[in-house]
Length: 368
Image 1 (cartoon, rainbow, N blue to C red):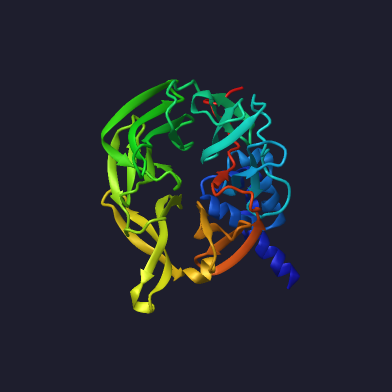
Image 2: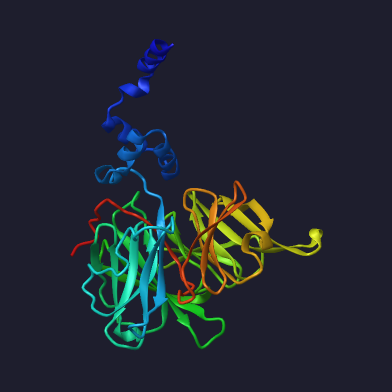
């Protein structure tokens, strides 16, 4: 019996593969599959976790950047929470490799890069901010040239390492004399040219400053106040407007498994007026066709307390959010309909969460 088992094992082609061939094969798979293959054996687990191989293998969600109130300084400080909720942070939350001595504010993340701002003063001043794009995993960074426009604006980071090593920073200038604030201009910085292009919008695109942005298909997507997703190209031009499946406020967009996802509340009149969590996926991007992906009782997922969206996992059907005044970080597995408490972030945590995916490859656009 034992001899037969050994003989069968010898005939298995997988045992003839060298470590280099295994890594080469895994590098062509999505991040979700690579994570699953860690369970094949301890050999494969160590192979995938090896620092040298991480440069070749696709990475998945590592954790979240947040801003917390501080007892020692009169401003918020950046924090990083591992997805597991345990152990030391995978990256330096203080970003101490940057040439900054005082206030640091994390603004946006995109595919392993982090956009942050710094100020030397004790008060927030739009005319006195320096901006950096960095890779916290590799501790590489580049300072952005001053925009010379001191208006209040929202900033979004665009980066797709599968297409180019260069990134874009979208600066959305808002007219705060109107409510809700409306977008009256866009400025886009390109790391490839080192220059900005400015685009005035006579048609005025309303924007929601709370919802995260999504960079995909070479364009920036953000949720607008007119219940649609505005799409801007890297020249600041408005390309299209994608209507969302409902006209409710407090919607949330993110990219997951290569497609745009939209989550929100929905009143279910057919079930005694209960409130439902609904998640849609943009099945057909060109024709703007949404498909309902998941529906669940909102009271089951979020309880009966305040909540805040955090993220939709980029590689699987999991939603992250916080509940309560102490900001308890939760996850909801849509496939299994299972809830999990990850950790407590604390009531001094701001309701701005930036999901981070480690980037182990070097970028030509970043330097010290």
